[in-house]
Amino acid sequence: MDNEQQQPRKEDLTNPLRIFKNRDYTLYFGGQLISQVGTWMQQIALSWLTYKLTSSAVLLAVVGASGQIPSLVIMPFAGVIADRFNRHRIVLITQAAAMLQAGILAYLTLTNQIQIWYLIALGLAMGVINAFDMPVRSAFVYDMVKTKEDLPAAVAMNASLMNTSRLIGPALAGFVVAAFGEGICFLLNSLSYIAVIGSLSFVRGNFAPTNNKKANVFTELKEGFSYAMSTSPIRAIILYLAAFGFGGMAYAMLLPVFVTEIGGNADTLGYLSAASALGSTLGTFILATRKKVVGMGNWIVGSSFVYALAIFGFGLTHSLWPAMFALCLLGAAMMLQMGCCNTILQSLVDQDKRGRVMSLFTMAFMGTVPLGSLLAGSISNQFGFHNMLFACGSYCLIVAATFAYLLPRLRNEGRGLYVQRGLLEAEEELETITKPNA
Image (cartoon, rainbow, N blue to C red; front, top):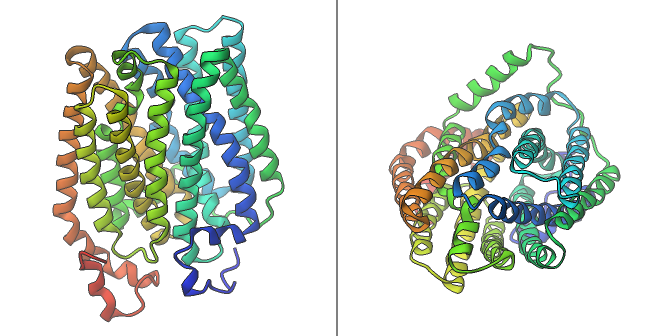
């Protein structure tokens, strides 16, 4: 990575589109956009097919959790691999494996051989693939960014990639499921990986590993964990996301329950997912206007409180349009929270430990969501979907309030690292960290 490249002009720092001057990132973005549309089509079709086969909120949560539980075990090791090997090659391998998984799912569905146990098994397979893919891709995106001033734009545009695909994918999935069935959605997703594999083949750059040590894998795993847990800002963000994700995203896997209650179909589920994506897109553009990492702690707190209140609002809805508004607000708040956390981590972490730290970051969120979803599924079965939402909202308020209480101390502990990374130019500017409007 060429750190000597000319820095972007100050007047360009609020324009997230500046990242597309980077050829490699532009190729990556285009391929991923097509692939992610297919991924969201598969996710919507999979949720609908699962609930159609089982009519059980618990089994719906089990299938959803099967795609995320492997991250609890595998993702830390994936972080070691990301620091040891060429990240470009790893991403190519994981995308090819995901293409194969989607193809098998399409074949079983189109030939009427699909059963709930196949869905769980294929979910576990995809969970293993994602456990390697997600932290490596997070670090790989940073490798393509030439200057630290471009990092917020890269994080924001990477999030906009996901959110744009969430706008398009669910709407397409609703139409395709209604017209042709779930199997065609899975087939289209498998074919979509051709775009990302092709674009990655044209990416050129120095993606050689920065960690050339030949230490034992468990030794490096322990080193990465110790580094993350001993670095105050990094530790706080990872633990906070783990706690918040447990109850904050539980509702997402259970949306087919709400759709059925209001008499909707696969199209309805697509509209709800698209509403959440629209909100996330708005959050992305807000985040992209940020010029500095300093002050993002306040944004994390504010967006977390908004998120908790939006879950309460969703719990009060019993029809499509109010639910879409609540989910739009949820999407914006979640994007701001996750984007700020990601930007802070990417700015502070040492390069030779980036893969391991990003694996912990991803595991913190992805690993606790399925556990919370299983509990939420049980609550929904016993007490109803809306009471489950009220429980999740209350939990998120408690977690957000705890983080807000601890934030001043976390700022003080992290000041030295902000200066060391050049995020603050002089010691006298340190008080800007503590300003509420920073």
